[in-house]
Image 1 (cartoon, rainbow, N blue to C red):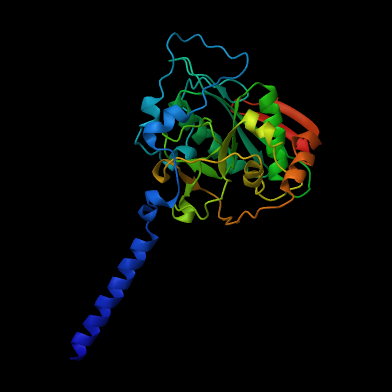
Image 2 (cartoon, rainbow, N blue to C red):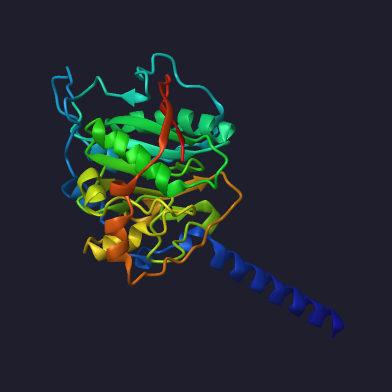
Length: 312
């Protein structure tokens, strides 16, 4: 009898462990966790626009059907290697496909300070990733060189101003510790601002909250200017961006979880719940792009990125 009692306990323990594994498995991030653009509707939701004064010598237009229907997953090990030879990246981290004429131009903006290894890995990985999408893009790294608290939002505003000045119609605001895993996750703007990184490995590929709008997001330059950018005094993550869009009556959108998967290299997790500020309308009109003040120390066109160094 004692043998059967022990066996029963082992079976129950095994069952509990099995259920626990199932509950934590990434595949539990089912389609019903949030609303998203169906894959068949992605192309019709894209905001087709190229940078001012952009030109291409290609004869045929780029076709993005195969991009959004690509079911492959990139290996994170790419970040540990080097770029392929003849990568054709221009100084300043700008890339234009030669196979076809792109109809999408995107500026990727990264706030940065003291993460040299992460930045190196990010640049190698992202250039390998983005060249598969046949878009025109440029990577901006905005570095805070003073000793003040790191101000993500203000650095994003600075990068956005530089990208808009260069004529880019689409902005991707990007944390340096996040790497996209699916090439089908097109780095382009949709008609509504899009949360690209809604499925992160450190969160078991589950969206923590419906109103999370950080990590990696895309927004058109026109929409970013409409909401007056972000709060310059926000030294944390861009927690007011969602609220500003709400005040302006602009909804956000996403792709399905399987396409929105990211690898987070940082150990620090942020599970911030965005709380609506009743005075946001007044605040967003006073603080943002229209009140942006900083000292530009230097802007250098490196082989893989445009480096903007600022003192806040």
